[in-house]
Amino acid sequence: MQCLVFADGDDHVIKIYEQSAGLENLNRLMQFYASLDQSSVAFSLPEIIAIGKAKSHILVREKRLYGISPTLDNLNQFSSNELTIFFRNYVDVLFQIQNIKTNFLEPGEPLDQTGDFIRYSYYGSWQSLLISNVLHKQAISGSLFLPYVPDLKNIVDRIVENIPLLPYDKNDLIHGDFYPANTLMDQNFNITAVLDFGTYTLVGDPIYDIALGWIFADMYQNVKPLQAVDFVGDLIRERLSVEEFRRMKLYILIYSLLSADIYCDPDAPDGHFQWAMNNLNNKDFREVL
Image (tube, rainbow, N blue to C red):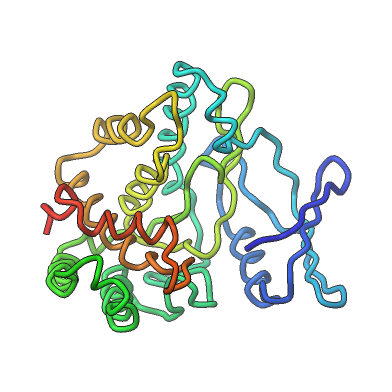
């Protein structure tokens, strides 16, 4: 959700949202943040202190999180060695997110209630959430995707066949949008905070989050001093079994299908849409089907 941010002393910030952000959804986010047990991780998490209304805007007071934002511009100023240090720490934190405990979400329940990404419902299981939304996305957006992925029906059918084979006992926290700009770091490139849980946050298989953290490391290959996706992929591969790494590829196909048109004008597909279509056509990802 887009907002304006202003410092409120040393310890807090004020965020100003349009009414479209939704008071109910922000209150839900506040309750979610309050439920997080971060005792097992070394980095900070957001905390909403208070929410109020002012004319046509919503005001949110949050705990101030300190650190440097590793934006694309900042990353491109790093040396290759500095990027190596940062992305090693990035992967460490990516694997720690699943250790953050919450009792706020039920199995198969998305955090966001707007339905912008996942339709809000109590699905009962991770697998049911995925199958329901993959089929729904095919029904509402299949005609948009078909010119770019001619065998879309076959791909969706194979994805749906594979989802029941995923682990049933995983209900860990999934950030869903973990990438460099959703973190803060210190001067030694240690990650000090993870930001912006919300639209994509779920509970389920943490391999899904790890898959997205891999592919989001540099979605459009804009980090020049280092092949970030390859480097991060190699670090992740060292920590996963062959089956888990294979599962990551299935999750990239699922995410690409679900998110392809979330930002775009159907008459003018954007960079994310093209990225998602390329993933759906990627032979290396498809080999898991």
